[in-house]
Length: 319
Image: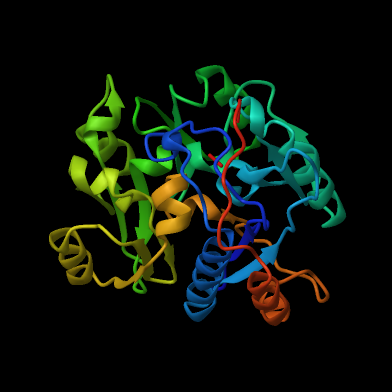
């Protein structure tokens, strides 16, 4: 089954502006050329696994919107009757709030209706479909609980929603929970119980039912962003650093594992492959849409013109 992802590449001045998570707070000097080549390598891996990519170019504005590469935060696509509705995020981080209008314009050009979440809500990173009609919404760090009232009316009529509070350093639900399916259609929910406040893995098991295996992920693997791996048609794309034990367990469950060297984007910016994609479930790209496959050569040429060093400016400030 083909899946379409919305992605946005880093600009030539990509750097860490916000420093809002445990990896990015140091705001290290960055290498924009390496970051762009890492982004391209992720796109290549997604394409090899059978995924399709809709490319949203970053706008040329000052200060640059360096967080736009983390499109998991852009919002969430919903089917509402015969129409598609894209619920736009309401970012909690000030330096990322300006992203919304550019995402709105891109979605509108693609023929989607748009709405804006009324409360602080950071998009698909805090809302995930587990299997069937069961969704998990997370709140407590970047997303506030009231935002779930913005999401509920857009769920399918038979949709069931589990609310989970999470805590730092797990700043989004996609850093501690990941529903992945192998080629046979078996779903495994990777879950780190230490990220949860007032809930447990057993409560999650009761919610998802017996057809989904809830597999515990320890703190070291969670901090290595094991739950932020991206599963495309049974191939799980992981950043380096996930334990051999966990990788072995996933192979035994029918997953193909591909590790990617994404040290520039994730070692400095924080997160994993899922941070860089927004799944457009059910959406089919029209002919002529700005897809990755048709733009790859131009994107590689663009990367070759990027500088190999960028020192962040001083003062208030990617993710």
